[in-house]
Amino acid sequence: MKKGLKITLIVLGVLAGIVILDTLQAKAFDSSPLLKIRDNIDGGTLDYIDKGIFVNHYHCNNNEDVTTWKGTKFACSVKEISLNDINDKIINFVSNNQENYTNYAYSYIAPEKQVIVVGLVDNNENNQDEFITKVFSNCCGSEYIHYIKNNNLIEFKDSKYVFEAKIIVAEEDSITVEVLKDSESLKKGAKVTMKITRPTNGINDFYVVGNNVRITFNGNVDESNPAQIGAVKIELM
Image (tube, rainbow, N blue to C red; front, side, top):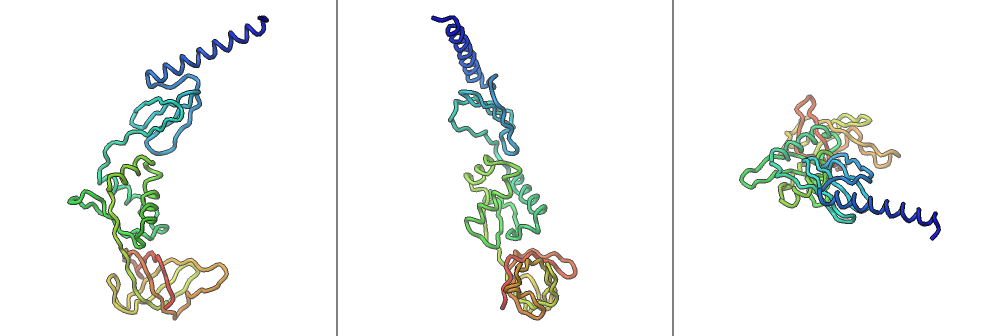
């Protein structure tokens, strides 16, 4: 055997031995392999993944360390989540995104059922999933979301309020209306302001003073002067 080939084989053998020993110690002690690439995770229950040649090492935010063979699925364990914690995160999300998420009406803890009751204006399965994803994806991660869904910790209810009104002020990005008749949330003659989005080409722009409209919103009324709401739907009558 040529000397150069022999040296190459020896070097390859040594490297293979190092990789094998590194893999075995990582797997045996749930530790990180020496030969790895670290992938830091932003959010959720997982802190980082050390990707080795044959194994992956997972470090969770609860200080759980697990090393698995490549291709093996793993999720950090989630401690029991309290209803107060879930409701606090919902309220925090809504308070920071109130203008951009008008489909939400309310949430409260129902201790007799051990659930959080959430009212949505447009209450269907897609919007329920969207709500859970929006609220908990950034703060808590997929494991938190799975825990909520698997344990049915949120119960959704319809919360749709409709009233009829006449437009009395039309601005570029808002309208003010006068309520035409008593409704569940508003009395006849009340003045209410809401944000609007005008069509970019001006077609079907019915936000004109004097027009009568039917407005759907989530029931939340900001008692300013005039009162303000977040309209979900505005239709020309």
